[in-house]
Image 1 (cartoon, rainbow, N blue to C red):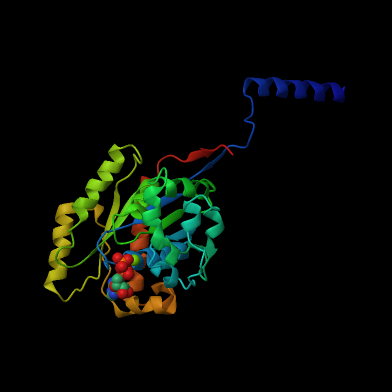
Image 2: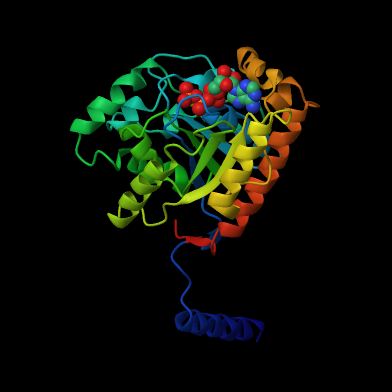
Length: 298
Ligand SMILES: Nc1ncnc2c1ncn2[C@@H]1O[C@H](COP(=O)(O)OP(=O)(O)OP(=O)(O)O)[C@@H](O)[C@H]1O
Ligand SMILES: [Mg+2]
């Protein structure tokens, strides 16, 4: 009798399953890894300082962050205390030799990983220009890392140009974070960058491409100029500009020589606080712009 009941329940369950067949693999909902490129073709505006410190603050706040050093100068690499080692950069995976996942290195800081750069990246721009799919190389190489959902965020520190490496970052990214130095001509170049973003979007290579945010750097509260520049940028670019402004600070300039982000070099400094608050603002914007989670079908 007990056996008969068990058999009936099993049959009913089978019938139910036929009506609502189970997927062949578990369906897990997850938030996709976001990729943000930190870019401005102007040199020395605070791209690397922002990449390193934002990445470190977000990691300290609980996000799993991959800092991707795409600049042959490799300043982000040394900024988190990682040595420049031959063959350690994204160069080879960009040309199909090995994977980017193999290049990911842990740092001394919890939840912060790095894809280092080194001098071989110097040749990447010229060689990419001759390669097939030359604009999509990075996007293709990064896809498995994104899909693994190992990281909440990949932050790409771009070189100071609109060369092919930067264009590759634009094709792979969900948005661009633009650091602007508080000086005259701060906005010089942003219209050119906007034009490039529009062209890439219109060409269909990355339909989600847009300026994610603008952060004002090296603000000196004592100068009228700093205040004027911030006001002008806010008037022109509106809410894309983050409320948080990064102050000019000697500690911030010193920290890379110790291989440490500012929160690990001088935790209670004003610039550590500024990057912490920027990280909160950044994370809130990122979360609000993260659309419905995608289903993992693997
Ligand atoms: N808020 C700041 N206060 C003081 N110095 C800063 C600040 N931000 C950046 N710097 C210093 O200014 C210089 C340029 O900064 P950074 O390297 O971040 O700019 P970048 O845009 O990445 O430069 P590049 O275009 O060469 O890649 C560095 O020496 C850095 O330490
Ligand atoms: Mg830099």
